[in-house]
Amino acid sequence: MLKKPNLGGTGLALVAALFIGILLLANHLLRGAKLDLTADNLYTIADGTENIVKGLKEPVNLYFFFSEKTAGTNPVVRNHGVRVRELLEELVSRSDGKLTLKIVDPQPFSEEEDRANELGITSSTVNAGGDKLYMGLAATNSVDGKESIGFLDPRLEEQLEYDVAKLIHKLSTAKKPVVGWLSSLPMGGDFDMQTGRQRPPSAVYQQVEQLYQVRTLEPSLTSVDADVDVLVVIHPKNLPPPALYAIDQYALRGGHLLVFVDPRAEADPSAAGDPNDPMAQMQADRSSNLAPLFKAWGVDYSPSQVVVDLEHGLEVAMRQGEPPSQHIAILGLNHEAMAKDVITGQIDSVNLATAGSLKAIKTGGSDKDGTSDLTFEPLMHTGQKAGLLPVQRFAMLADPGTLKDGFAPTGEFTLAARITGKARSAFADGAPAGVTAPADALKESAQPLNVIIIADTDLLTDFMWVQQANFFGQTVFQPFANNGELVWNAIDNLGGSGDLISIRARAAYSRPFERVEALKRNADAQLRVKEQQLQQQLQQTEEKLTQLQTSQPGGNEALLTPEMAQAIENFQKQKLQIRKDLRETRAGLDKDIKALGWKVKLVNMLLMPALIIAVGLLVALWRKRRRTAIAMLKRNAA
Image (tube, rainbow, N blue to C red; front, side):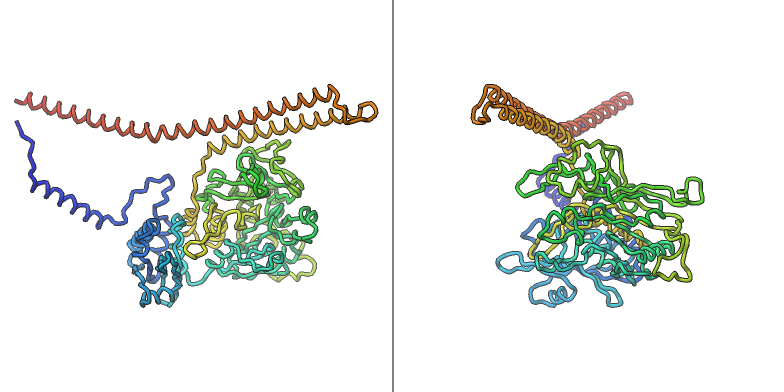
């Protein structure tokens, strides 16, 4: 019979030393290694990132300035610094020697601190003692090019990979793509007459300026330069025929267009009007359209209809101090509302307001149905519980809940689409009056059309998708939706650069509680019906009271007749019953949400441990049977 070995103190010490040695060796050899088990591979290097680092034509030097000692007092900052270092080390390992990394801890009044400031790295004071925190990234190449991220905000860790890849991509690109920018909205910043202060550029515009060479165009244009890689047209309101003709010819030449139209643009400056006349401001026309071009491109869009959606309507507060309620014209689209396209395939959240709808129409082409030469590909769409409401309903909207009154969903609507293929000119009969057609004017596409149309401009405004925050004295943008990513993806794709697309959509990933939101929507619908019943009963009772008062002999309204007293008593009973029903409906909602919460807790606290225990028992049973079988074999052999 074999005896189990008995380890003495020396043996235990050797085992402990071996264990510690293995841990240290593994920590050194496996630094940066990870197993990504997240649902969307959030911590896996994107293909676009790998293409960028492997496609470098010349060496790029990375400098990570990180005040490790100062960050040690803040676990969030310290852990983020580790995450940045590990990401950079992994990129260097995949770059085939084209990337080099130097980690610098700039001390006060040192040459390293001067170098950080020279490269555009900013510091933040973190305590009363004046200690400075550096956590920025700079990059240089062999031709004296340099780019930097002044401060890597820990709260934006999900977009870290994109920021780093963009930094490297900018250094590896000899020439920035040219983006023509034709907008009637003040996205580039302007002077606010109401506040008397300069309005900063929008977050979308600032990012576009960093990535591309932006060329501002005016509505009076008569042509678009051939070197414009992407033409962005935002809220084209009453564009003159020469400008429409210029856009038409640019598209037919194979130019790439990104168009934003809107039935009601909240940021429309022409709708501001006289501040002393709020009625005129509310009723002003805030719509935009490219009607002749859309018709030629096989697109139907109505600037007088707004898309509303019971499934994706967000809860908003119209006035300060009021509880939020669902606004079915302010939409929060999720991943299911996005097409599997390189632009939207990895987008998780886009917020829109009073958007329009798009659909394909016949263009009168040579084929039987007139549409085969053009392809209409939806990029974003509503749910099935959507419909259209006239834009006039939003002119003086005080209660968004009234939008549901009498509303009947009619199905799904397209909010953004890509148009490709061969198209005819919208000016088939020649250039419009006042425009001299060039000798090479086109009547149909010389190159396939490549247009993306988004039927909303409000998604471009900061308040729809991003917040400004102060972090250690630095102003940073915190996205809560992917509106910006949608715009940048579209420009990247139209401009021919697809490497950044698979990275950028990580910027603002969120997983909403969809079942809870569905329960809230159902309860809100029930509450709305109860409110309408209460208002109707109130109106009927008031009419009855008025009738009783006017029927009093001698017109004496001060006398309270038995009929009036009984009517008031009945109304009070009815009102109490309605309020009771409202409380019961709300209690039912809370009960359903709590039940769902208990199910989740049950799975996390009982089911998963039970599963692990079951697996352990099965393994133990298997080992026992294996040992029994081995023992039986030995006995038989003996």
